[in-house]
Length: 307
Ligand SMILES: Nc1ncnc2c1ncn2[C@@H]1O[C@H](COP(=O)(O)OP(=O)(O)OP(=O)(O)O)[C@@H](O)[C@H]1O
Ligand SMILES: [Mg+2]
Image 1 (tube, helix red, strand yellow):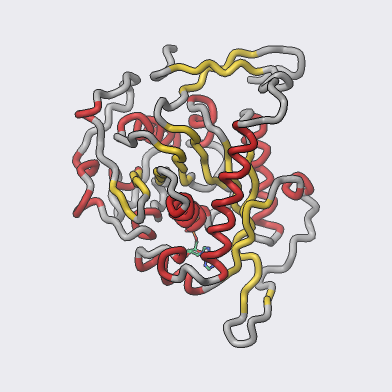
Image 2: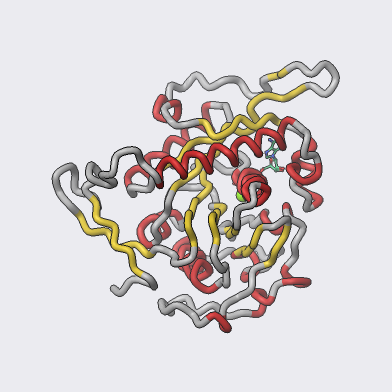
């Protein structure tokens, strides 16, 4: 645990060798659009010519394969693989799992190892290990960005990832109403306590654009809860509510592909640009004194940590 200012604590987190920027997409709240944001953001980044991967870390309801129109039975060798969860060595390349590639994005899902229709998901702490192992066992190659779509919540697998893996940033997703913002603020606190930089927030379902008159309708009442901590975060995007986003997701063609000129798709493209710009600023700070105020020494290890 971090012990406060002035106390330097040694945190040992694994940094993935070939991944420039590792981001998690999360929210304390379920159903706010984390997977929709992850998928469309990943494709938006790939559209910018970046090398992008997407790891679906939601074993309770893996949505990424469906939203991208991939199924394990047809395409993934990963389905038959046995993951050595206790094994902390880097696998030789020939033993690594090949990700699927869709719309220029390399994809892997924990769902491939569980079964889409299976009712029983792994214990939460096992899920953390599974995600960690997939980060190492998939042949991602060199990537500019790897996004992890997290399940809802603020306990596991989030805690395992924050503790063991060097995360370059967290993207929070929320919808406008109180109940979502309250849970998203919990996720913000969790990342801050774990010293994971929160890159910004995506405001999803932020108004509905009437297809008839073009006016904006606020479907969800604006939050009356202060939750001012959320208001201090950079807004990465305001994504309107659009039924086309649902249909496109269900059919395996994210809206950014199926309706690239729609306001929703445009908002995702802008969010992608925002992410790249913020990461660039973080990686090239104006003053050359990185981490001085953090009181943390991050140890960069090439492979898994040794306990
Ligand atoms: N901007 C939007 N407009 C319309 N529908 C949307 C939008 N964003 C998400 N949805 C729809 O809302 C539903 C939930 O979205 P999604 O699965 O991305 O949420 P989630 O936060 O990942 O959920 P979970 O917590 O279950 O993982 C989906 O049917 C999705 O298509
Ligand atoms: Mg999801």
